[in-house]
Image (cartoon, rainbow, N blue to C red; front, side, top):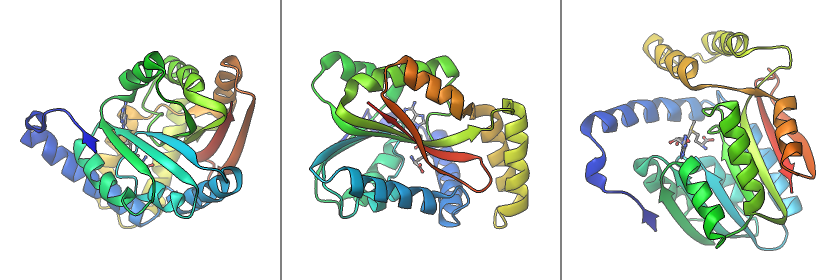
Length: 245
Ligand SMILES: C[S@@+](CC[C@H](N)C(=O)[O-])C[C@H]1O[C@@H](n2cnc3c(N)ncnc32)[C@H](O)[C@@H]1O
């Protein structure tokens, strides 16, 4: 089921923007420029090893869930809930997750608004909560607030898995963004100059990566029992972090 707002609310302009950005993001994923293949292999192994009994997963900012669907293959997933701002992405996610045998639901909306609602109703708890490349848009206090609430949505042995850009301890935001964009220029061979400008614009306006230490401190502050980094890429720009309840 895709629970969505009125489809008429998507204007032609925002549709066009979605299509342009979506096509570019697919190109980035298809060429593995953000390292999804390696990261989601690690996620797959983690789910197979740690969740042998049926488990419930919530994904915030799931996009089209292409890589999540691959990571869930042959796992014991019992139910999957995907939340995203984009109705169009959720419709594709619905198709991508179709091959996974479990109950599914997809909700269009802002997770900063939907998470407090889930906490308030206390109707659902999850063994795994995943946010992949969607938390770095928030400022530090907003990340802190969401992570605090995720703790109460997890089952007693549940885990919050964060896949995201992370800056080095000695780097400020500007230095990180410069380093990341230098790498984009150098290694994302198939990205055209026009597409590079879209990437640069998006990252400069929307990316607020934290350090691993800062994310660990947030976890400790909100009573998470254990924090571990299961993967970081060779360039040290991206990590897969687990916050164990
Ligand atoms: C860079 S894409 C990542 C998609 C996928 N999780 C991945 O790892 O490839 C970010 C996704 O998060 C969604 N998103 C960003 N902020 C959000 C929010 N506050 N609430 C819901 N979805 C959000 C966007 O619509 C987009 O689909």
